[in-house]
Amino acid sequence: MNSKRFLMAGVLAVSLAAQIRAEPNADLQTRLERAEARIAELERAEQDTWLNERRAEEVKALVREVMADADARASLLVGGGTAGHNGKNFFLANADGSFLMKIGGQLQIRHNWNFRQRESNDLAAVPDADERGFEIPRAKVWFEGNIASPRLHYALQLVGDRDDNSVDFEKILISYDLMDNLNVWIGEAKAPFLREELVESYHQMVIDRSLVNQVFTAGRVQGIGFDWWVDRDTTNRLRLRMSINDGFRSAEPGTFPGSLTGDSSLHVQQTSGAVIVPTRNNKAFDQDSTDFALTGRLDSRVFGDWSQGDDFQAWSGEDTSLIIGAAVHWEVGETGNAQGNGHFLTWTVDSSYERMGFTYFGAFNMADVDWSTVGSNRHHYGLTAQVGYQIIPDKLEPYFRYEYLKLSNPSGPSQNGINLYTLGFNYFIARNNAKFTTDFVYAGDAIPTAASMGLSGNDLSLTGLLFDDASNRQQVVWRMQFQLLF
Image (cartoon, rainbow, N blue to C red; front, side, top):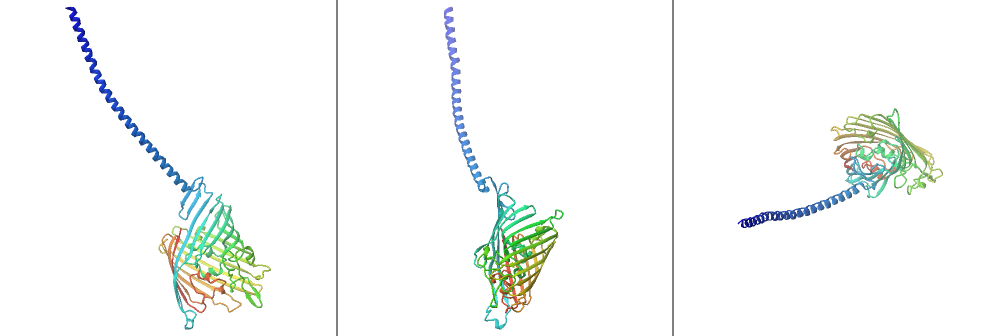
């Protein structure tokens, strides 16, 4: 009996153990299957994450490559640098500014209308009293900056000819700052003589410079010189400019330029009683007709800022300005030159005043010419005065200019004095960077021939189209011009 009981208990125990084992194994199997499914899910997610990270790295690498290329294109220099527009010019520069190139340009497009009064007997010589049409008086591009040091400067300026669009260099210059207030230069540049000429064409008040300026200007010269802001109580109230050069307009193209002689050239030769005008084939050193020429100019800034003398406008926000100046040009003809040995002295005094939109400029010029081979002297003088007032600050500026020119011509009858009157206005879109100008010029006196003023016919056209025909006394010119600087 007891044996049967023990056997029954053992069978029950084994059955119970088997049941207990079976239930956990089923649960573990379920858990295992769930774990395997989770692992597979995690593996898929890990693979997707790896792909996303790889794509992200590829995109980042592409962005870095594009940015590096953009930086390289912007710097243009091995050591990095800058490029852009500084508010006045486009520029390229390295990181420390030791290499710099500023790029600028000027465009002027003009329409002219000229009406000439004529007598009935002038019809054959002047069949059409009205002349009108468009022209491009100035199209320029310039490059300037410094090389290796902020003290070592260069300047190149290209200009298109108004007649045939041929291109010539108007400025070729190398200069160095010996001190902060002393600069020396060599090359081709404007002689430091007439203030009206030294103010750039795009900073003029009137559409173009005066006829008086065209006759008396020394123009562009080949030579060497310096520009010195003289300290007076550290305010630089004096500015002295000097040049030793090859003579009057020696850096200008074409035949030898006229020089206030009354017969198209200063330097002449008398042969059998005839006056022969020399020509110059090019600007080579052996082609000039001078032993030497000296030009000097002294300006005094009574009050105001020197930069206010760079233009003829009184802009809003500027201080009151008064600048007084004087200049002299002395030239001696080539010794032993078959072209003769004439010399001359010409000088000028001028002043400019700016206050609260009002601008005044005036200049007096005189020249004494000694023709040693002809044995006669000549004396010429001219006067210019102009005023303007911005009735709408920085926007609308009416102006008026008066000029008087008196030429002496010993080889013929003395020329009558010339009176010119100009009335017009400027409309500024972006100050001188973009402006529209229109004016009327009235000439009540005969305009002498260009040759009688020592100029070529083209030079006279720069004054705004007064025809150099003495038979036509009264002329009225209407000019309209748009200017753009970049």
